[in-house]
Image (cartoon, rainbow, N blue to C red; front, side, top):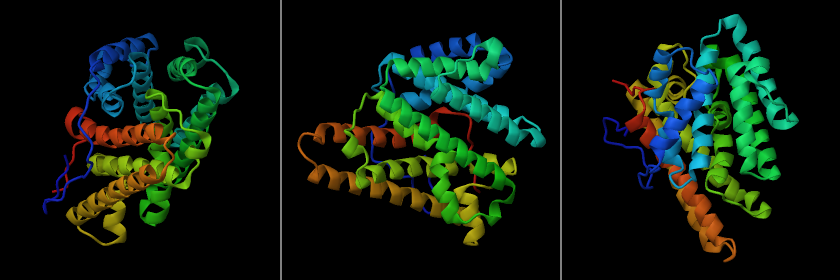
Amino acid sequence: MITTNSGLELYCPYPRRLHPLVHEADAHTTSWVHAFNLATNESTWNAYHDQKFTWMVARMFPDAPLFSLCVASDFNTLLFLWDDHLDALAPNEFNTGFERMAYQMMQILQAGKTFTLETGGPLLAAMSDIWQRMRRISTRAWQARFARSLKDAFTANLWRMQHVNKAHNISLKDYMRFRPQIGGANFFLELATLMDAIHLPADLRVHPQVKSLGLYCSRTICWANDLYSFSKESELGDELNLVMLLKHHQQLTLEQAVEQAVKIHNSEVALFNNTADVLIAVCAAAVKPVLEQYILTLGQMMKGNIDWSGIDTTRYQYVYA
């Protein structure tokens, strides 16, 4: 848990939970990674395995069926592997490498293209396999929403790549607008409904306050991630992060920027809870059970992200002193 020197802590009033079959899902993902040659050697995979990507989704979705949890674990692991693959590219290859891969990923989701190890290599073959399994447990409407959200994330990350080396020129407003898509929190909202088999009626899904719930949840996850990851990112020269942008734009010390970021996170959680209370109070009785389930799932996502970042993974080392 992040605690500032003034005693301010990340606020998220949801229970700490972990899927009881996390080890089974983790064993599946390990076998799956090897089947698709996603790790170049055993020592590389061991380093990734220590980061416990399965634990992240197992904390976010502690009630998911094992089949669904394995899909989420594989997908989450693939995203982190792809992210690190991009980081290893030469600067002159980075943008074109990302755009090419993003285009091919969307060919899988929107055009029904299937890649094998021989025709597409490990990343595309692995995504083809994930998409086939996602389709088995989802509707066409969900598939279309998920594909759109992933495309939005790709677009936002292209924006990020164009600005990562000139972070101080980015306004806080622009960064905060793009951040949920940059971090993939937008498509994790869709993943959440798949994991817990939540079928929101169409009119409820587009309700302004329900959409606000998703936005507050997405941003909360991203602000927590920024707080846990800014030290690692800054060491790599990447200051496109809430903490570092607050420090620059508001002329704060690092400790003050951390405290301000924690306050922003906590205010988003409060907005989420307040909006949820209002919605539950005024919604029709027929939709109340599914709305309550959706709210609880989003709350668990926020809490699970914090617990994974602070307890399980070795990926982030939170240092601001």
